[in-house]
Amino acid sequence: MTIAAKAFGLFAVFAVSLHAGRVTTMDGKRLDGGVVLKADGVAVTGSDGAEQRIALRNIRRVIFGEASEASERQGDTNPVMISTQTNVPLNQSASDSLNGREGKIKGRREGSKKTRPGLTDAKNSNSPAEDHGWFAGATVWDLGEGMRASERQLTSVSIWIKHEDDSRCDYAGSLAVSSDGEDFTDIPDTSAAIHFGAPKKSGKGFNQVLYKFPPGMVTDFRYLRLQAETPRWTGSETRFVEVDAVVSKVAGGSARRYSVVLRNGSELCGSLETMDPETIQLSVEGLGRIKIPRLAVARIGLHPAAPLMARSLRAGTTGVLLRGGDFFEGDIRELTKDRVAVSSVLFGIRQFDLSRGLVVVVLGGVTRAAATFELTTTGGSQLRISSCELSGGVVEVEEPSLGKLKLSASSLRELRRAEALALNAK
Image 1 (spheres, rainbow, N blue to C red):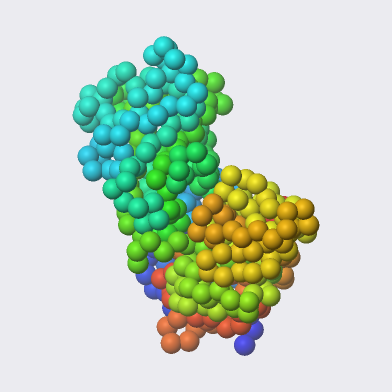
Image 2 (cartoon, rainbow, N blue to C red):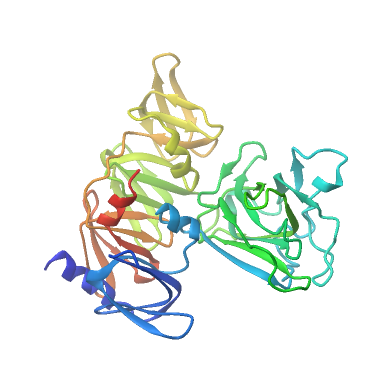
């Protein structure tokens, strides 16, 4: 059976409509709408109700769910969904995690009302407080001790901006989290710049920027930070009205999520079960428990901090990257579920607690191996695969280092041809 024929089988398992998906064709055309997967490819239903069929041979990329504009521009697989609304009523949340909590502003000019954002809750949905002001800078919220940081996960962040002030109604910013309030980790792919433009209608409406995060992507934190920038279109700081954040408890308790990056470029995200000199066992959404040969592993670290911070590592080095950004270079001598021992020429052997202050353990380099497809799951895992087929209602794939794996159909986030990756290689 050829690769194309096996991929044909992959689409046959689905016959349900998915929310706001996206299809990119081989000639570069982009189709947005409800995506229904058929045995011969996909059907995309647009906002006007018209259906368009795309054969598999003409598909470069299928996203099962919403995709942010930032993700599409960068060519990255992005589990973060960013959506916007303009000139809408304030949908005030009375039960979000920031309700009644005032964000502490860092870098604000004291005594200036113009830079006082007051990012708490609006007084009511019809007449929010008018003294929130406008600002650019960092605002930090302390979510308190009501839930242990290791049990907390971020579900969504909603940012409300005054609409009729056309010189201050745009948005530029990003989000970060921290467990101690000092060392923050940027949440990958939350940096966004959105031009709402001049109001098209009069009235006291509001612009909304909504971030949605898949379960388990952002966990283990107590502090949330909004880093607001000055939008480039107007050169004026944004007039913020309210920020809401919804958090929930991590499914299965306080298990930390780890990212295991293989030397061939695949990445598995999940809860660390066991680790010994020979294998690493990870519990992965959609895949179950996976045993990974240690020799196939390039990096192990907290997710999502590890993929982001590891980009700054110098090629050819091994050691550990600490939460504060320092890298302790040396040979990895011992590695268990709880600790890692690193031997340095200058400092000898040092022990590090895997659950405290450690972001990435670097065991080797990454060389992206040739692949036919790259498949992404809703849990953040990315597999570079040579084939895929169906067996008993699940998707079977061949990953060079791990062999044959079975995924639940509901865990698929994206499938794209490997040739599309080459166009976006950096």
